[in-house]
Length: 173
Length: 229
Image (cartoon, rainbow over all chains, first blue to last red; front, side):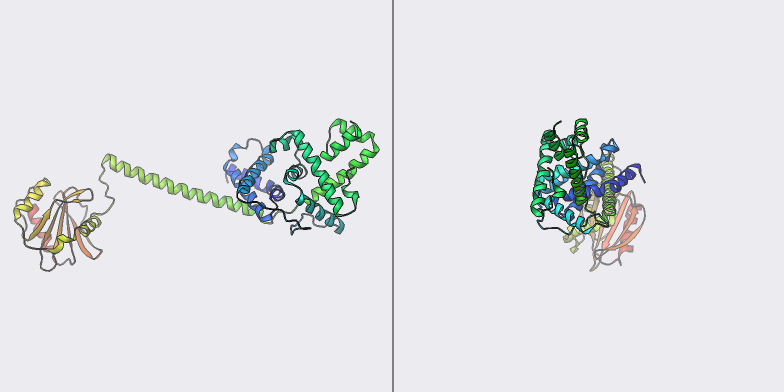
């Protein structure tokens, strides 16, 4: 196996799951997310030589995925299904029933969040990106990112408060 | 940092670790309590977003990449072969190498298909007409076989020929002498309803074509005699 192939295998095994989660919350469709991950990694393979630092791989892949999504978005406009919970498996293997219900509510609220708020929040929570890193990726200012994150959490809180009265979990006062 | 600034920052990023943020949390019990609730929500949010990827995701990506690689390699090989063929054709064209792309037999059949009218046979023409045709091709024949009913100097592909027809009863024989291609070996063939024979003769090649090969031996002897006399 060539070193390039080994590097690619490591990328696929190391980042496929993260890319899938990111893609899912970006496009809202599991099948589409899977296609996006595949297209992203195939494009990554073609330009693997341009990846200089392994530490930058995740951000690099996210950039490719966002471009692929934008390309796809030109042809198709997927919509998040506004249902209480879609048939999407979560990765928790033994979740308490109340916790599972709470996460379902959060997922439902996330789907209803506008993309401009949802995307930076997903990058922050799932990707662990800082405000500056998100700003670079989204090509907006750090201040704008902070505003979007602030509003994203506020909106999420409001939706969850309206959904069920238990403010304890999502109270951000 | 005051409480309002802290709460604002807390809403932006509960995991912020700036010095003034950390200091305020340590100093303000109510804000520390709010920070704990925000972190709890953040953990719940993370769990909610952490959906499981399809089981075969990694395998399907690696398979797609391997398939793409094979496809590209195949396309590359095809392109390379095409380029090689084109290069060879160029070399043949430029250098003039006598590489025969199509066998003489095939070219001869294709040639007479285009000139089917000459197969009707007819009355024998004067031997001088045949001699003149060969002379145009740079060959002098002192003895011309009897029974030639048609003669023409035809191009056959890129070859120069003397194209003749010999009346042999109901089955005339087409005789093509290729001036500039020397067959490497004798060949009998049947193609597209034709029987044929190719043989080296003199500096060129003699090609016989007919519906039946029954007269070939006799015609061959006649033309061998013409060239060897």
